[in-house]
Length: 419
Image 1 (cartoon, one colour):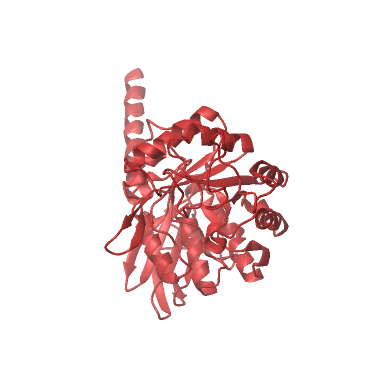
Image 2 (tube, rainbow, N blue to C red):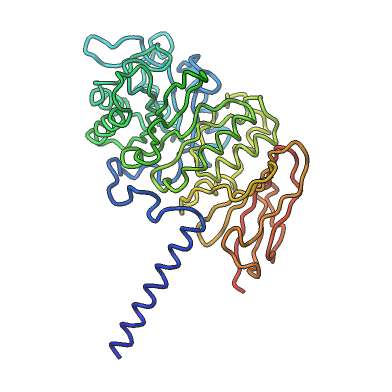
């Protein structure tokens, strides 16, 4: 009897391991979501178990920020209902500080634009149930060259940020001393560990390709190592408010999916939704793909004047739920031909998210087959359209086909049913 039980146990173990590896292979993810599953995590502080959501000043305001803009944006997050959907971070980008440190070597808010100080700003944001993010740099100066970087000041600056009540740090890579990027980011990671405050650490590592005059993110492939030291890392160049930029960045970010997971996320840059350079169909595609890829959802427009159509995109609760799904597996591109693409990823409770994306210039039919997701063609599934907010089929089998407008997408969640 004992021998039979032992044999059954061994058989069950082998079968379970086979199933886990089969699923991981189907979705091109590593067991443990990357190489650092065992060695991580320097900043395992419970922060960002799902991708961070909030607002960042750079895409719309660049250096033109002040405490009035930031405070009124925090108010807008609350009044629009976006905060209740998970948009919690209010993030200052470059240009918030004085051009030089004070007599004690500390960073200080620019008195002309932040006269109340960063601590008072953090208190204002926290009083509304939100969190404050800030920008710093792993070099001697930030990328605007308007304020000091944190190179060789990592612990002092981390301590200052903690004293102010900062909850998120975007850490850029300008004006450095030529040492390896990884070493300078690890130095800030260690400093943040010492201060004991739960701060999201976002690594923004890049280099300048002089021949083409463009900035590229991820010089040292941070997806392979940054998960051991931070919570998110840039994988692409800076986004701009065009459909070409969105498609280019989505493709670059797609290759690193296996390294992402709860507490560590690939970052294809902030959202452009609402800035006016794309159509609403293009913005819906942008938001859908970022959500499927488990990207940080950081709004980049002026929320205080955002249109109702913009707010409906940013506030689509069903799409946000895909981004914030507890399984934390980055969706990926499964098929692409003539600009007609199928993207998909696994969700909790054995569900699957599917995006049919038309990157061509003509309306077209796009089909996703159950076998693309590892499902048997005979498996029935409930099909939920996340932009129409309704179930389009309660018993769909084999494949899903939709007519998709140029640059638009269809986004579905499939819930397989027992045969």
